[in-house]
Structure formats: structure tokens, C-alpha cells
Image (cartoon, rainbow, N blue to C red; front, side, top):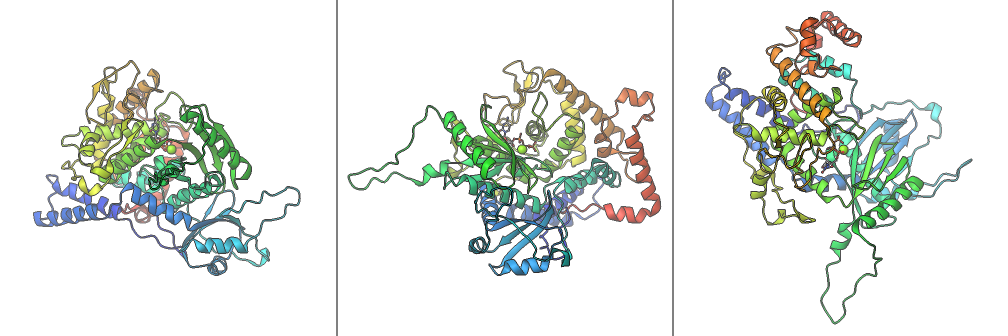
Length: 577
Ligand code: CTP
Ligand code: MG
């Protein structure tokens, strides 16, 4: 998404964006027929790409550490509608330097303020007070979530620009895709529109940090970290916020002291099992959030689930949150996905397209059920990319072979070892473009022998299916588990059918672009509420598009006849994010 303007800090263009652009250029150069530039020039571009890709990448834990530290220096403020930005900043500056800030809407106007030092927050807390309730009694909990009142609200004029935190309407996405120049451009446009913005990522870390403050009332050294799509590079605006309550660090800090003749241990309460402990801990934190958590509503304690959790809505940030504990493997799988997503720009591009396609076709849902999940789909994308010749990304076993001593990780007897340093992984020699890969993905899974083979990203090869589930995707770390165990036969059939239809549409649309098409084409055609059925579409001559689609087409045409150059300019795709 575009960086914010005005007084809001401009965010630097991310190096991956440039690398993506260069990567795409590099691949084009290596195609026959596209050798417009001389070989030396192509080599220079590829060398710059290599440099970009090898010098800038942070490990997952470095990234998490940096973001968490940034969140600990930040506060959230609920503001009145008319807020003079400059005056507010001047007021807050009395407590210390502000390094970043932005505004957003979620049940009213809110601001995120990042101070350069944590101490500034303590100073602001000292200068703030607990409000007196007129009809309700306030719980006196001093959090980093403030409420700002203006002494003379009517005199104020508002000059703030809000950062967008939600995904645009589907019709607008399709419109933007229709104006793109190629399927590859469409894929990049889709990512640009839907990927988490810098502000949204900051807000996710800040929300975890605010919840950590509350959990710390019981467990002062606990940490709460985001995992899942908020951090694995595949998150899209509006996705849930998975939180991991980590109590293990408490144990780690108390290394056994062997000096002298005494051995001191903490007196602890013993409970029947680890699961029981997790349920109880989440139970009290859930209770705390419900009773004392500012902005936490609809708190549900789902403690009997396979993975006990507390689900709640954080109104101020607008996130639907799932808090789990004792879930270290899920954190490791988030790290693994982060590695794959950061390795090659085509991984994210393909996973984004497939995830959006599946959502649009109701193959996935935010409600749990017998359908595919985004996690399963992402693993399928990874598997498909491992199977290309040459592979786009390495198998998990190859990543394990590149690991060093500090990467060694065993959780509950499961080997979760893999390399954390991205620089140690050799770039792929595969030069296929992302539009080819998208079409091939549908073709591949439209014809995959799900009845006899399982998907295994550890080996990067299909294996014999160990049981009769309709689809078997081996959990990368808990290798006896099938992550798609919930999927039933009819959901799998829908997936296969839609994959075949989509491969067919992409092949049929080959070479189409905004210049030649009058109806949604390429990726836009796949994101229409329902991919037209091939046979029906043929019979009906594609004339049976719904009213909504017709209206959309009319509005696209109307806009392009107004001023074609303006439309083109507005939607010209930049591969930088
Ligand atoms: N996870 C897992 N095994 C599963 C399901 C989930 O290890 N069977 C882990 C994965 O790391 C996943 C995370 O839990 O990324 C969060 O799960 P979920 O919220 O379902 O998936 P996300 O990847 O966050 O995708 P979404 O955007 O749909 O929330
Ligand atoms: Mg999630």
C-alpha cells in the first residue's frame, strides 16, 4: 500500500520490493525472445538482485525482536474525531521524542505513537489519570491504551489522514486487476492491495504488547508474540491475530546454581498435566482480559479444544485475536513459512493469489469446518514450488541440512531444526514467471492423485498416503499429523473442480490484457464470485454473468472511456511495496 503522506512518517521502500522487481526483470531477461538487453547488462541486474537478496534479510527472531521492542515503546490513543495533529504531537513531545506515528479508524479515531524511549511512556502515565465513572465504576488498570479528551472540542479542526487497516471491496480489487497490463502485473497488484501494511504490522505487535501487559499481572516475565499470518509474510489485511503466550522464558532464566551446599528451588504448585496447566493459565488470563482488558470484548475461553485458546475481539485495533499457550511448534511453522516467503518473491505472489482465489470461491472460510485452511493452501503452494524442475524452493530436509548448532530445535520429541539464516540458502535456478506458475499450480492440483499420495514438504516429494483421509498434508514438524484432516470428500472435489476450471480460464485468457479485454480476464476472472463453469460458460457464451459483475464491467468501461491515460496511470503497477 502507498506510504502515508503529510506529517505521518514516510516509510522507506522495502528492499524486498526492489528485489521482487529485479527478480522479475531478471527472469524476463533469461527468457528466449526477451533478450533485449545485452548479456552483461542482464548479469549486472542479476548481480544487484543477488546483492539485494543476500544483504538485507533478517532472521525471523531478529525481526520479531526488533518489532517487539518497537511495540514496547509505543502507545495507543483513542482520539476525538476532530484532532489537531500538530498540537497533539507537541503535547506528547513533552514526555520524549516521537519517532513514528499514524492514525487509523476502528470504532472511532485512534493514534499509534512510537516514542524513542520506553521511559517516555512512564512519564505520560504519571501525567494521566483514571477517569471517574458517572454511571459505571472504572477498573483502575493503567495500560498503554489512553483516551484523549479535548478541553474545547468545538474549536478544533481535524487535519489527520488515516491509514487503511482493512481490505478493499472485492469489486474494487477486480477493477484494479482489470486495468493491469498482464497476469504477472495483476498478481503484483493484488499483493500490493491486500498485503499487510507497515502500519498494520506495527499495530499487530502493539496489540500483542498491550495484552502482554495484562497477562504480566499474573506472570510478570511472560511474553506474548504474534504468529501465523501476521508474521509469516502471507498475511492479508483483515486476517486474524494469532498470539502465543510464552511462559517458557520464565523457566529458562532460572539456570541451576550449583555453588555452595544449598540448592534453592521455587516452591511451585504441581498440576496433573501440561495441558491442565495450559487450560488453567489461559483461563485466568481470559478472565483478566474480560474483566480488566481495555478494548477487549466478546472474550471466549475455548479451553477444551485440541489447542486450548482464548478468542476475543480487540476493538480498538479491530483485530480478532486467538491467544494460545504452549504452542511452540506453531511458532516454528510460522518461522518456516517466513523463510519460504522471504526466499523468493514468487512464493508470496503465488500463495497470495491462491489464498485470495480460494476465499473468493468459498473454498476457505473464517469459520472452522470441513474446508481447506489458508495454512493448508500455503503448504500446498510450497510443495508445488518444491516440485518444479528446477525447484523454486528447497525441501525442509535441505533446510535442515543447512542448519548450524544454534538452529537445533527439538520440541516434544519433534525435530524442528532448520536453517534460520536466509543468506545460507542458495537462490533458485528456476526462471519461470509467476503467471506460468499460477496456471501450473491449478493444473498440478487439478490432476493430483489425492486418493493415493500425500503432500510432504519435508521431503519435497509426494509419499504414499498413510490413511484414507480425502487429502493428506503432512504436518512439517509433527509428522504423524495430517494438517488437512478436517477436509471432507466434497470440499476436496470442489477444490479439484475449481482448480481445473481456473487452469482452463488462465490458458484461454493467455495474452489478454486490459487493452484487449472487455470483461474480467486473467486473475480477475478467477476472483469473480464464482468461476464460470467451463461447460455452462461455453453453452451460454459467457453471457450469463451476474448483475453485480455486469455493473462492475460497465463501471470499468465507463472509466476507461473517460480518460484512458488517467486510468492507466492510476493503476500502473509498481513492484515496490
Ligand atoms: N498451524 C499449525 N497446524 C495447523 C493449523 C495451524 O501448525 N493444523 C499454525 C500455523 O503456523 C499457522 C498458525 O498456526 O500459520 C495460525 O493458524 P491459522 O490462523 O489457522 O492460519 P494462518 O496461517 O494464520 O492464516 P489465516 O490468515 O487464515 O489466519
Ligand atoms: Mg491466523
